[in-house]
Amino acid sequence: MPKVREARLEDAEKIAQIHVSSWKSTYQDLLDERDVSNSTVENRIVLWETVLRQRVNGQLAYVVESDEGELVGFVSGGKERTKSYGYDGEIYAIYLLEQYKQQGYGRMLLQAFAEGMKREGYKSLLVWVLTKNPSNRFYTKFGADPIEAEKVTIGEGTYEETAFGWENIDHLLQQFS
Image 1 (cartoon, rainbow, N blue to C red):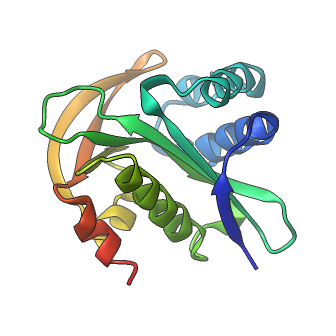
Image 2: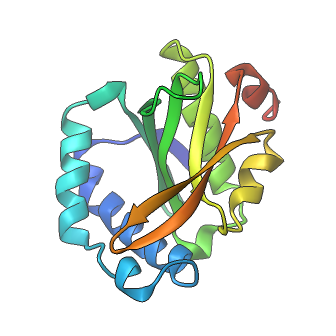
Image 3: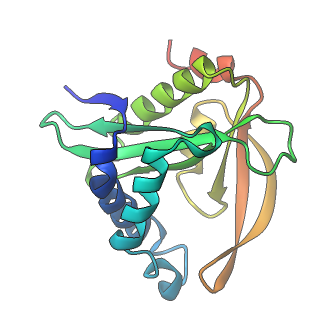
């Protein structure tokens, strides 16, 4: 049976592999090739070792394991970074290996993350997603509202991102009851 748990330092390399693999499969049709291919496992290992060693911004990170105990996805986040929209929490990253999408793993990650953020005292939550990313439906399915769209630079390209949010984290948690 799949399970979600808090990420540990020894998960950093596998999280980095998932991050890069999912990044490339998710964004290959949404970003210019040069902007998709600039993400490397080596760079992400350093990032995830840092995140998992010290909880910057009160960052939480969870992984989901498949039935076979293999890490297949992760979520992380913490304090909302812009302080512009009245939300206190933010999902910084949520990724699944392509073959595990549409099987409930994302739901498990989102639920565990929302529960963890509530325990940490957060009241609201937002996530930034490329506007053209079809996974936006994932967030609206769980009651997120579009908040704002902004231009963002990724690599050498400029793209539009939309923030989706839950003004009350309890409303998100009710989606899992």
